[in-house]
Image 1 (tube, rainbow, N blue to C red):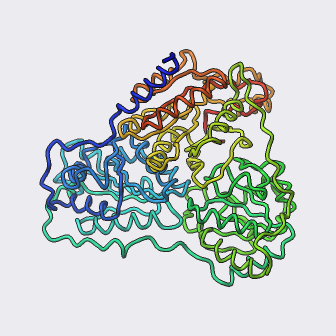
Image 2: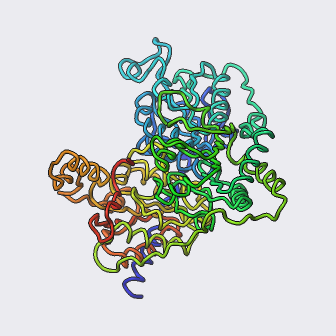
Image 3: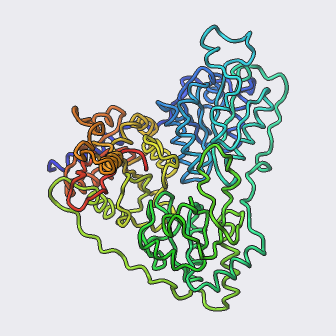
Length: 614
């Protein structure tokens, strides 16, 4: 066996030797329902919650005991995390794929404070998460000196009430059963979002004084997503069938393959141009002839041209529709096209966060989830047309981009790295949990609703690792390869989340697009210097992650992962991906430190792989 073969074999051996995350009980417990926290744990099981991510804390020690000694650490199974932000981030990544709430437990006010950024991400991302918190005893006479006082808040839910759908603090075991059930139901109801239930430590640790009557959960499922009225469907169909240049903006839609196919059929029945957003998970096949422009973080000149030509625009819960019109038509330009705006997002808007965006014009506002509209709309369009299933394209059909090969020598630019990733994914069923900031969008190809999980929602840094773990957990056993490409800033801020992946045996391939700098902010400093007539050469000051260089692979290996790097060129990177795949297919985790040169030929401003998303 040659050196390369030995390296590959060793990597697989390490992966298969890893712990699979099933913490065995040291002793079988008496699993009799006897404590209030047992009733809380039983409720989670009856709701079919499979996992609960947590960072252990004394404020929910009663619930923790019930999860272990009453439920036997299964259904839900505990996922130990090293930070509460990671626990919520994992649940968000899981929800992006499954569209179902995973549970999270956070310790008192301090754990909740740690978790706030990830909760905000789930809120902005419209992802369902069930968060259980705790507080010191509400009864002051039961509080331990010092620690219980600083870990008790009168209204703990107020910390996150502006960016959760609902919160509660039940006062009895029976009320806790109902509260957890309601929180799960609300989180899983369109529009999705996080919910929070705070459990008094004294309540958790109290004995049950009477029989708990658990609800039949089949009677407490989330409601069917809102559907449009028949009149709205007919009016929308009439406008679209009569349109000469219809455009569909496909935004926040379901992960269902059935719904995916129906969206394709609707576009084909109209011959409409379809545009999608890189901030969101795939809504339409990007190589389809009716998808004329690659998905973008910001609209391209071609997107603007298509939008200006449109006479009817169907928005299927497009994120920031008013902003899109400003970017494509101009800040003060009138939207002359008839606009059909289908969304239920209005039901979440509360005025604290500006994630409701600008107020868009709409000639027909339909308060429905997009996929509830598509099926009846497709039927109405076909009935009105009275013709064959497909209409002729109303815009020039898509011409697939001719992608150059990556440079074989020299340090990769981000585009070189993206081209290697594209070639790797084309030959496999891969789910990208995320892409590094500034990713060249003409290199992506989405053929399935699970090809990409979408943006984190809130636009901070550090969510990439935990989101990727949650996505990989949801895909475990599916046959799809879970992979993420994150910036070095994102990696370093959230790297210890990866310990949970190693501990739980969650297969995941991680690529770090490492440019050693918060380059998005470099671009901002360059703009400031130009505007103010100051030295552009100083744009890197206070931005670089060098002196000393951070050993990213050492950080990964410290969490129990395998990996290699820095990988400097495209040829070596392609080989590293194949080595990583072997480890991941065997059940392990593999990290590749792929060095990116922001000054590589053809990069321009495309080297943004670290820093906030603005």
